[in-house]
Image (cartoon, rainbow, N blue to C red; front, side, top):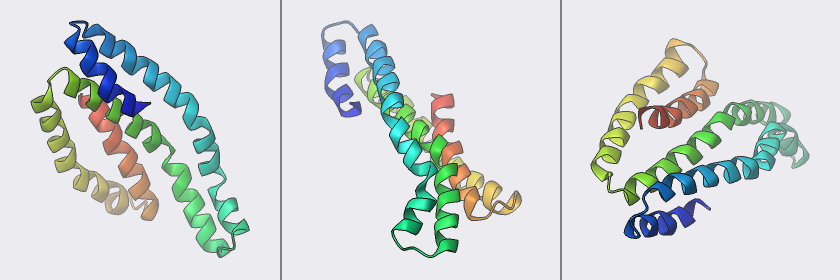
Length: 140
């Protein structure tokens, strides 16, 4: 569905109806939020699934904890991907580039903050990934 935005948004701009881009983005976000529900469910039980597949218990528990903390990132990825498609269609490429560069520049500090400074360890990497994905959405 997000890939469809690469076609729909430029067509809307070409037809001189750029407001349709926002409508398409809204619809895509709602539909993908619904489609992500099974993915979230799978992430919640990822540790148990790994144990059933024969992974050692301690590894499965660690992976399960990590997967649960990645749930906000799923929605962040969807959000920033949709925003990127709309921004590209509206010819806001420089703005998109600057936002991406700023988020990429800040991400090592966010990783350090969560992993080392707050002492979240490997789980901090999941929280950090969620944070800088959502940072793009907030800045855009």
